[in-house]
Amino acid sequence: MRAIDPASPGGPEVLVLVERPVPKPGPDEVLVRVAAAGVNRPEVMQRKGLYPPPPGASSILGMEIAGTIVAVGEGVMPEMIGQPVCALITAGAYAEYAVAPWGQCLPVPEALSMVEAAAMPETLFTVWTNLFERGYAAEGDTVLVHGGTSGIGTMAIGLCNLFGVTIIVTAGSDEKCAAAVALGADHAINYKDQDFVASVKTINEGRGVQVVLDMVGGEYVPRNLQCLAEDGRHVSIAVQGGAQATIPLFDIMRRRLTLTGSTLRPRDTAFKSLVAEELTRTVWPHVEAGRLKPVIDAIFPFADAPKAHERMEAGDHVGKIVLVMEG
Image 1 (tube, rainbow, N blue to C red):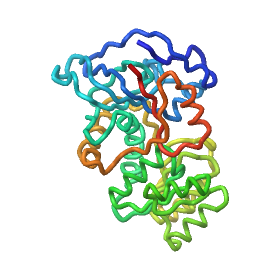
Image 2 (tube, one colour):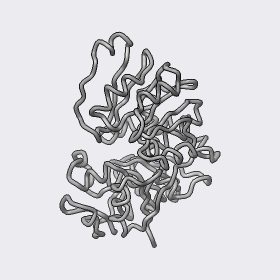
Image 3 (cartoon, rainbow, N blue to C red):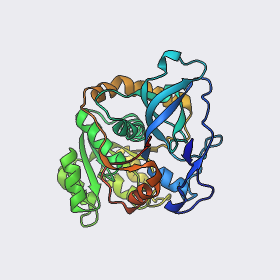
Image 4 (tube, rainbow, N blue to C red):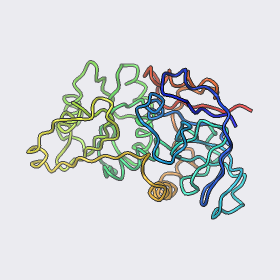
C-alpha cells in the first residue's frame, strides 16, 4: 500500500509516498480501507521530530480516518466487513489501509461524507473529554476557548451550540472572528488588538466564565485564570505558547479554581473506547440527524500532503484540513 512514513524529521517535503505492507488487524481490531484522513497539529509536530509516536505505534503519520472495514481481527463480528466507519487511531492514518481498535470506531451515517467523517474523531474526542468531562461544561455555562477557528475551536462551537453552552472564542484576525461568529460562536475576540481578559469581563459583566479550554499555555495561563468565575475550571490541551507558567496560588485557593488538562494520544484503548461509547450515546444522534458537522477548510489529494501541512502551518485555516485517497 501507499503510505506516508518519513524516514527522518523535516519540513513538509519529507511527506513523500512510500510502499509499506498492508497491516493486519489483531484481536479486537479492524482493517479499514482509508477514504480520507484528517490532518492535525500533532502530526505537524511529529513530522518535525517534536512529538514521537507512543511506544509500539506505527511510524506512519496520522490519527484519524474514515473508510470501509475490509477485514476484522479476532473478537470482531465478521458482519462488520463492509461497514463505513471513522476512527481515532494512535498512528497510521496517512495510508491506503489502517488498523483501528474496534472500540474506537464510530459508524459513518448518511448525513456525513467520508471527508466530513475523517474530520470528526480527533477534535470530537478531544473537546468532549476536556471541555465537557474534565471541564464539566453544562447547559447554561459560559466557556472561553482559544483558537476559535482551529479544528478544536470549530468543534467546540458546534458542541456548545448543541448543549446550550455560551461560547466565547479568541482568534487572530477580524476575519477569523467573523468566521467564528458565523459558525455559531456567541462572541469572538481578536487577541491581537484586544485584551481578551478585559473583553471577557465586558462580555459577561464581570461574572467570569465557568471553563477555559486552553491550547496556548505559557503566559496565557494566569490571564485565563483572571477570566474564570469562582469554582471555575482551567483545562490545558496544548502548550503552543510555552510549557511553563507562573500562577497565583492564593487566588486559586480563594476562588476555588481547578487546573487540569490531558493528552489524548497516549491514553489506552480501553479509555478511548469508553469515550467512543459515550459519544455514541450523547453526540452521535445529533451527527446522524445532521445537526453536527465538522467545518472543512481544505481538501488535498493524498500525494499533496506537503501542501496540507503547509496550510496547517500557515495558520490561515478555518476548520479542518483533510487528505483524500484516490483510486
